Image (cartoon, rainbow, N blue to C red; front, side, top):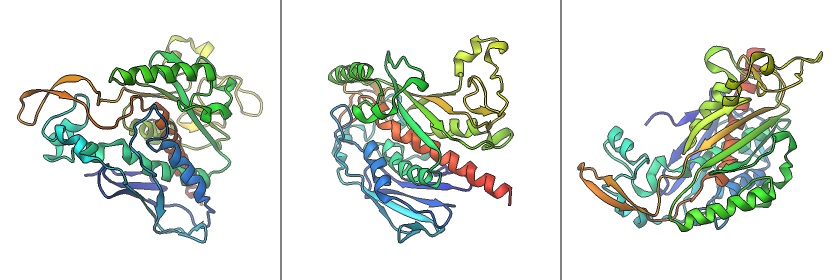
Length: 354
């Protein structure tokens, strides 16, 4: 299986399956001498872990990261940073009903078609549990670039939307509720709706917005490795993501150029920021902001028609512990992937000027 490594200079390779002994990763390309706060890395993992509230999967995993290499006396050594996260609460029998059948809109069918074999326990490698490794990598990338602020939060759940511009949001409210929405009234509605959907045995999607401040000018490469292209790839690689837009996004298509252009101030900043902090694929020093769309989780606790490995029509009802909405737990994953992209481009910039 290819495609397990992300990055050009700052690289993260992940391994493991949802119901295996452990998941883990190797970070290569991290400079030596970076002081790491291991508690902060664990804090990031705690935001993503299952079982943290009543509106997420009740799988009980401590998600404690154990570093195996690349760190000595609290600093990076410049060698590969290896780490593992043990799987402590597998219930593989919950998946016996899909051993020979495929969940609609899940990776079950495509994995079987591609490889001729699949780990049906929790989805194996296709499980979102793999994203815990990305959070570790992103947490280290954040500490490589402490001057850059990366903040993600829930912007919508189903039809309920946070109706505020990012400049008007109090980021300190994000962790004040289990939905991770920085608006109390909206958060209460979102939480109630997720509980309602869960009671129906169904699932719902939503969006995460991310705001990146204090980005140096000049990050990003021409043509194929544009900053927004790599951010888009990073976000679209996350489980259940169906869309990515930055700056004015799709709303910009309805505007005229005279309204959409960001006019310059004499210091190079712009009066508006419909470009989303990126022009020509390169950061211009303004805030970068983007939205990531997540679909409803494919596994639902309702009867559905599907097919089995013999091509026969069968009936299926989801079992086990699943998120009725992935959005709240996806917030730290979005931040982590953004951090990995920025760390990679920051190091590329340093190499290009040697």
